[in-house]
Length: 393
Ligand SMILES: *[C@@H]1O[C@H](CO)[C@@H](O)[C@H](O)[C@H]1NC(C)=O
Ligand SMILES: *[C@@H]1O[C@H](CO)[C@@H](O)[C@H](O)[C@H]1NC(C)=O
Ligand SMILES: *[C@@H]1O[C@H](CO)[C@@H](O)[C@H](O)[C@H]1NC(C)=O
Image (tube, rainbow, N blue to C red):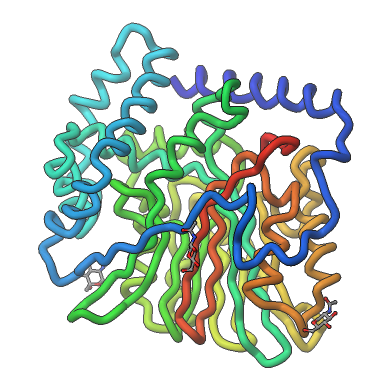
């Protein structure tokens, strides 16, 4: 199954690459956008709705309202995922494993996520194995994260979540199938204890983890994938066969829920193992920001903000910061150009949204843009679209 997936993905990426190269590149990139905020126009598909998750409830009950509201959309995406697996494995053995083997893995998922997943399965009426499979999907996000400090020492954290080449291209809508299916599931969540916010995060309905989050007055956190689909599928297979490592969305939630400072969060993120390699972008108060580069076993690099030396922002896409980005997917150079033009004095939600709205930083894969300010405790999330002409990734 893994091999089928990878060969297919590579072939697809190669063909798209040829296609892109064959056309003129210029229409797919543009000069730094300005005045895009507050969001409007064709690259803005709507606000993301807020839900509250009460952490004082038993884990099985926490997601009931979300699942009840989004039952149809969750079932639709799970079915899409199963159809893709079926295409690669018409014998049905793989789907059989999902329904009969995956449920046993619930025991290896730590509390409270095991019970939350059981609750989501119960509330949605979708078999447990398929809900576990659905959680594995979120190991595969790629993205752009920016942490920047302005002249007044205010720290901003912004990100695009780019997601969705795994299921192929929808020719009619000129969009990635998965990307389109994910957008209606997007949610902002306010996680509360005793009716007070502990942290906020962005997630997809039916998924108990978060991939973007803020603990007000303490830290902000986002995750970007490192390595290709092969690393991701290998990691998932390993996990499937019982290698005990945390899913990244759960790890992030644990850190947001239980670490009370930037320092504590950094220590937790540095020492963890991961099922797929990744980058964590972590921001705190003035002077506190870093990108932690991880392989599956350990931290390989910690890149720190250094405002005194003129390094007032950190920009992370899906390539190691000490290497040149892949030439067909260079979002680093254009984003840096825009940030340098904006200057430290003028950095804000508005200018960061401009950067993340500039093609090719914005692409057909971009699902959402989030803006966070740790001092104000604010999180804003916007659903994105990239009308033609736009690069597929
Ligand atoms: C999104 O939210 C903003 C601010 O709350 C509001 O002004 C705007 O009308 C909303 N847009 C849509 C499309 O719902
Ligand atoms: C946070 O820590 C508490 C106490 O150790 C634990 O019960 C809880 O499950 C943790 N939360 C997460 C999300 O891991
Ligand atoms: C920064 O903002 C000021 C006013 O807010 C504006 O006059 C100036 O042109 C901006 N500078 C840049 C480089 O955008």
